[in-house]
Amino acid sequence: MGEQAWLQCIRGCEGRYSLFEALYECPRCGGLLEVAHDMAALAARSSAEWKALFDARTRTNEWPYGSGVWGKKEWVCPQVRNENIVSMYEGHTNLFWARRLGEEIGIPDVWVKLCGNSHTGSFKDLGMTVLVSVVKQMIADGAPIRAVACASTGDTSAALAAYGAAAGIRTIVFLPRNKVSTAQLIQPIANGALVLSLDTDFDGCMALVKEITRDRTIYLANSMNPLRIEGQKTVGIEIVQQFDWEVPDWIIIPVGNLGNITALGKGLLMMKELGLIDRLPKLAAAQAEKANPFYLSYLTGFRTFTPVQARPTAASAIQIGNPVSFERAVQVMRQFEGVVEQATEHELADAAARADLTGMYACPHTGVALAVLFKLVERGLIKPSDRVVVISTAHGLKFTNFKIAYHENALPEAEALRRNPPVELPADLGAVQRAIWSRLEGR
Ligand SMILES: *Cc1c(COP(=O)(O)O)cnc(C)c1O
Ligand SMILES: [Zn+2]
Image (cartoon, rainbow, N blue to C red; front, top):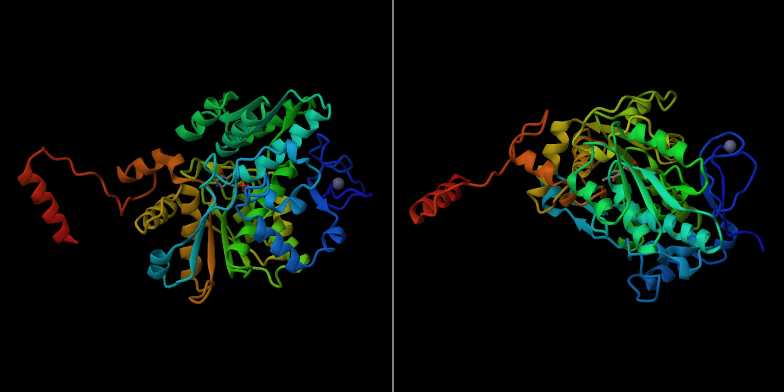
């Protein structure tokens, strides 16, 4: 019997490798790897049968299929034995109908996929469940793995530390000092990871972890490892499923290292190939202007790519100047007629605050995506009748410092036009009444 899924080079070099091998680059050309599936075997089930199976598993209590990732196990990582799966029932996150925000901008059909409503507060859980499960199986089958390591802008390390702790596997995280939020720093500390706080940026951490993981006893958990992409790709499938298998017109996603947009595209393409959908949405990648190498490359039709020195941005999880998955992401963008747009510090902060005032609690990266939504609407690219999904990548509660700084009007290069500072008063009835009445009348 042939393998159900294997690793292969994204540039098309010969060779298939096992998912259970510690291999992160094509041995022939050094390029990125991807997980490929036996699509002929998957096509043995009809599209209607797949939809019925995925619907039946949604929120089931039968381990591990209630997870949004493992409910699609055959498409994700069929060879993991269920006893090795390390899951926190990730996925099935709320698709929030942003009704008031949509009405404000004249697009009634705007939705926000709240991927941050997850165990560690970001979409990184979707990929980490797959990676850590594979590692658990490798160890169970005798591989000499002592620890799993990653470089991170904060959320990857939180997810790795939590899943590693749940599995009883040691974890090592490389973080750029003072460039992650307090919540993101304390998460891996609490989960018992070895936390290395380094005097560099994300790209510097990435270069070091690549060197360290040349020693095959330390396994690399960054998204150049294609296993994470397999879990993250369920987000696009889940969005379509949540619309009763109808494809939205647009999906807008904030991007840094470009793994997540690759994953989003991969899931949608797989659905199309297996007949679950008959068209693709348009994709918009949203970058912070302070870390915009993908945007700059887009302006050249992706003909050239130059890494940049990422500058400080409130959207710290996408402060990346040399995205690892560039080549994969370009392949995806070409198949989706994708566009790339950017947002300044002011635009992302203002967009997040605007969303909050309609009931959300947007992290700065979601702010980047929302700012891009507003721009594409203004430009007429997104039409009033379009159904639009904005991917919210993390929970706003992980970015309390950002929220506080905004409402204190202390964010660099942003003017907090929508700030709502607390009113400080003596505990005096008259003063309280005056404060309330003046404000209710002032509106
Ligand atoms: C990781 C992350 C991103 C970017 O995903 P990439 O795969 O690096 O493009 C965006 N937002 C948040 C909150 C993240 O943690
Ligand atoms: Zn190759």
